Length: 222
Ligand code: CA
View 1 (tube, rainbow, N blue to C red):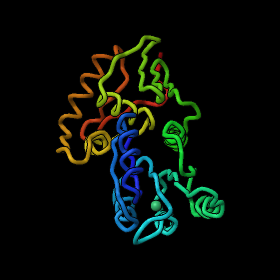
View 2 (view 1 turned 45 degrees about the vertical axis):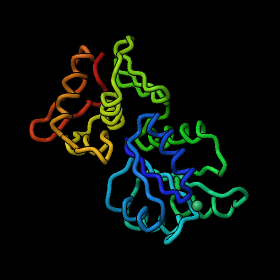
View 3 (view 1 turned 90 degrees about the vertical axis):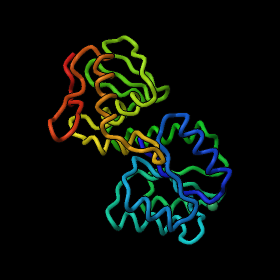
């Protein structure tokens, strides 16, 4: 899952980046509104954390522009304490949730998990598809009731497909959502990770559509 953080306070930005990376998200950042708007407009994110008080273009304007352009990714806004009007304006402008500064990082992570899963149509933090289960709170994978140890990259790939059952996802899209942006994105490596996951999950879970990509079918058989 790929997250964009738009925040101008360096310390909050660094704390958010560290916490989200530790929770296995791929993180991109912007420290002012113009860059943040551009990245959210031109790149594909699974979630955006958007501070409202930003240099160059304020967060509310950034959000309104994205929504006016049809960008539908979930957006969590960060607001100053006691600024109830900011929250109302933010939600009316298309924010999906808000958090008031200062906040506990655990609460932020819980809200991030909830927004990502709700936008994918899941109500519970444990995503279940037939015999396959992933617990997004602790990155645990189980298949037919048995825990399956997975690496960080394997988890990211599995979680990305698991959030959108039945949809064929191209190798390059997968690469974009599981690799840090500074690293060379090698879509061949996606094949290697899929092969490793198939060995670990001793049943048909990830299907290949030749020339198109991979999918986890909706309603896997037990
Ligand atoms: Ca700010």
